[in-house]
Image (cartoon, rainbow, N blue to C red):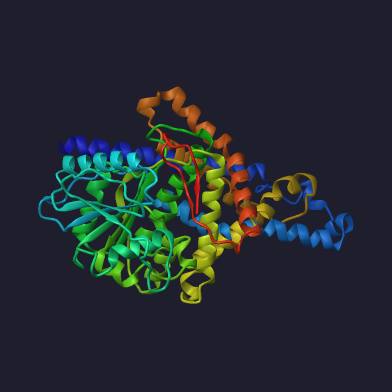
Length: 469
């Protein structure tokens, strides 16, 4: 057994080294194509932009060329995450007996529109926990509408009353989450732990083991791990491949910031959230209507402000990408709207929002940043070689995150070598489509910033209708 573990460790290090090498080659190619290695003899460097375009267009072109640098901090965190942390970690193993660990509540929040989906995932997640050997746990389903789940051991169902309102007037998911924390509803002690899941989230044995080890250590109050979107039936290849970049970000920026700084510098996701009950009650989800659009981001920033620590959880969970392109755009629009509201909140000092400020400004400028592609070809201006290098690095890194995310999302064993490589190439080819959808979401958000809405994405393939509240 020790020999097998050692061989596995060597194999994982080799795999990680191959990923790092591929990342450097890909980024290098993008830098080359975008002119990052140009010297002073290049024809574009000889252009006098003021004589060619005039003062106004020259200033405009240089401002547009500078906009991509806004995402440099986020890009660097992804690069450092994929460089210094093994992208092929060993399978997690229980560090102690699962019979003796802290109590864990797996909390699923749902509108109640897809009861069959909730029931199937609850049964599957319950089976996974039992298979791992977890004993001190329960699954809690919190719903706005009665979904009539059959009685099962370790299952608790809460229906949020229509008349319930929080002190600050929180809405949507934040309202349901705050309802669970009310003193007459909550049955957990401050030493217990909550794992927040969406209605479509599926646990894996590795994620349950990772969660148990995380809460048993108890070194930090909050944690999160990797979510992939391609392990189950794929309904829409375009949206699934577009979501692969999120997997890359989990392994990159999320892992780097949580392991290195133990802070949510660039926020976190709303699912696969591991939280100490006492800490969650103090932070709370009751911060008003505008904090309810992206309640996960606002919660993270408040916890950041209060000095709580965040950690990276081993293992991965499965979710589904949106089934339609319009759902994908609506989902991104809501995220932008919610994170923008968090940035504008006067309750959170600016020093805690620097990371998400860069993200929001990058989002706002995304349509203008995308214009650099045709402008560079048809309206070249002389730039410092270092500046071209930085822009190429940013573009190459973000492109590689999509390819790497696809490589981690799909199974080489299931697909075979040819299909696996094809899927990774498809993720690369899909990048322009992803940018188009992200730009559409940005423009839609900018045109409707004052409209507060919470779009509920359909994740049950048996129910194709769309719900908008």
